[in-house]
Image (cartoon, rainbow, N blue to C red; front, top):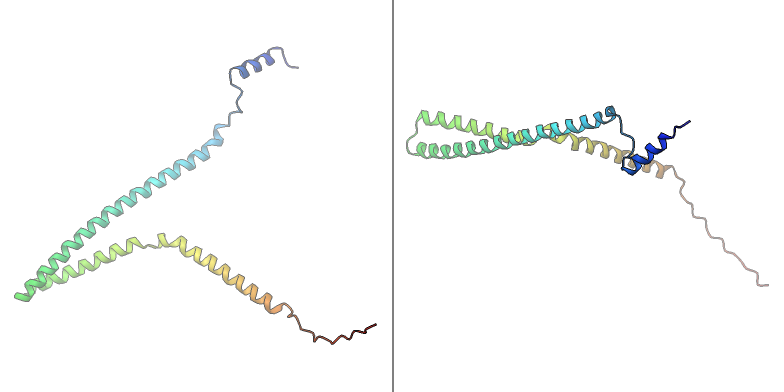
Length: 158
């Protein structure tokens, strides 16, 4: 049996606006919070990596522009007076420019960035092929309607 105090406590809590849904267990909220916290940490890491990559690309582009200018100067000097030192320097500049070009291109298109679209293409392309085979098989197996020669019907005028 309920005591007479319990209904009055219920009325008091309703009056004070404390009639709220039951509080969830703290253990139930931890996985969601942990997931959100982990996602935020991952986003921060991705942003940091993107900032580092942007700074690296800018630096590589500046270096590439400087090396191209130096290459043009050396080519001009080689036309006037060829020397083995200038030729070696020109070769090293060309090698460095090739490395920078590969570095700039390879970091923009990595397997990690192409992995998801690749598998989506494989998945949906494969699904399309399977559906196409199924429809072709169904079309081959279905009986073709035969046209029956229309028989001349004679109507008896009676």
